[in-house]
Image 1 (tube, helix red, strand yellow):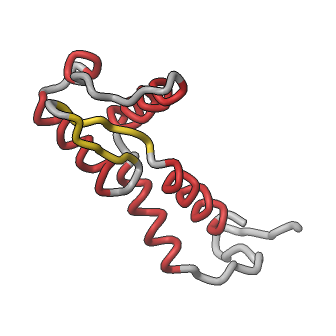
Image 2 (cartoon, one colour; image 1 turned 180 degrees about the horizontal axis):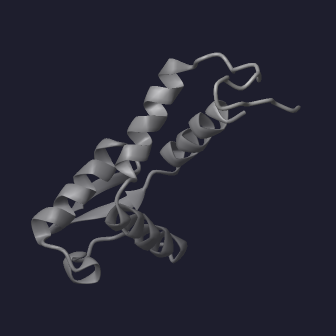
Length: 113
């Protein structure tokens, strides 16, 4: 498929139909991932998951951020469904929610099909 685009004209490609709901969901999920610390948290959780564990230690020293900032990043990841939290006193045990990761992939693929 070729398109002809000129400075004064728009491209002559047929545009895909809008999928507003998927686009809105994708934007919300992408926003939840839009910080390097949140990506790092997911990376740490993934490594721990491979060894059968979960994150129940202090991330402050690993991320070099204030406790309140780390808590906010965890809250955002949890609210978006990327992670789950289980209370194992005296701490919380965080894990990746693989079902939501698949949903993210599915929404992403539906938009870019």
